[in-house]
Length: 566
Image (cartoon, rainbow, N blue to C red; front, side, top):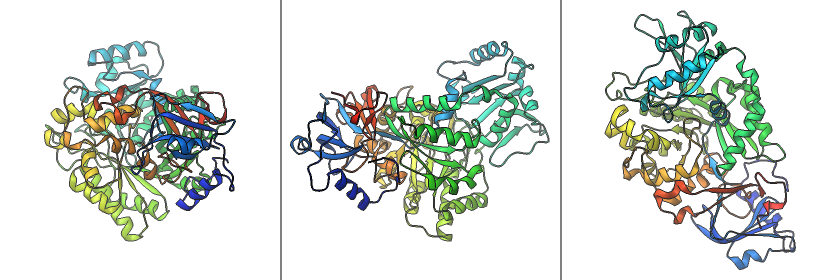
């Protein structure tokens, strides 16, 4: 049975598939059986089982050893787990694989390799002396002493001869020298693009800073044809292979149609790799709002390997970059950040997607942005009621119980970037937000108590596509610099696992074919060296990923039935 076809199966179709896998009244023969270990299903009704059988790329049976071994035939491969753990393949609810791989090949000026502006300057000067455009990634003043600024003054002092572009770790801010701005055609008379801005001083003069994708994209044109030197298809393949090595079998890209290298090519490369003979992972995603006219033409081509789900909008910017839209000013500053749209504009965009019958995902870091997103979703339902649209809010960083309760009432589901807690927790608490607002940073515990089905994600390249770190952060709230950021927002390990499996599938209307180990679903699996349900919470990030299977085929090995591991 081919895995191509709709990913939007209903329960009746799933039951039919399970019946077909079992054969027409005959005892079916499994391609592979897993046993003698920990098989974690992500199904609350049956959290662990003794054995699992796979046939034709789907799960044939789960249960105790005897009942599953009944499907053993002469050619069945037996995989003995020997104490290792088999789980549903992880689903990344929000990540940017092409951007992540591109930034891996840029000059690193990140806070984990550069602790001072002097160190960053030295790196940029060395690159500028090679006489080509300088493109760097990872600058994050929020994690540096004194929160140093970057712009024309600093970058022009490094070079006025070659263009210099530095991208903030958040992905929402870029800095350039005057050479870059001139080459990009951005001057004092340039108007801000929709959803973005070029920062200016009190006299209206450019400062060398661009905020949000639309403005940053304009600056990229000042680099010349550097993108033409990159093999984006090969780069995309390498990126998706890395996600598979991390334990993911499905990734969600909330930004299809980005200009890397062009909107059409960005979508085509992801689609072609996901539909190759041996795809590393399944890919699904949301088209950027500037390319929203493409959505209706793309959705009919959906299958289980590549799916377009709807539209992505950015309501605000980065919390650590002080551009997320807050209700109250940032700690020690007189700014509340920036909303990228007026409420009426956001309402119109959301309503268009809602009427189109697809999902809308809104990036909303700040509490003011979350409020605007909920206003827009409520307005859309008032104008045209839809049953269970499952619209999303992304990050929900500076949330609170009132906003999350309202989201639950409206039927909106949140996906939290919980690496905020691990990487920036101390900075948010001490410097950016203050203790009270930071306590409810990425408030998964509150969402759990409210009964919301939520997910956690990495938002790579801002975070790392590391599911074990995400699990550990969800259950410990441990910060990188030490200490715990509000233990009340912890969630139990089973809930954390579901946030990367069962509920991540549900969040994208894929719960009937993936996300848990149940008969009839795809045999998308991950093998770990230890059972996260039996591991100390503070040791979860040390668990190693050993292998993944997509539709019963082991990734990274020659094609053979169900990835025989015996």
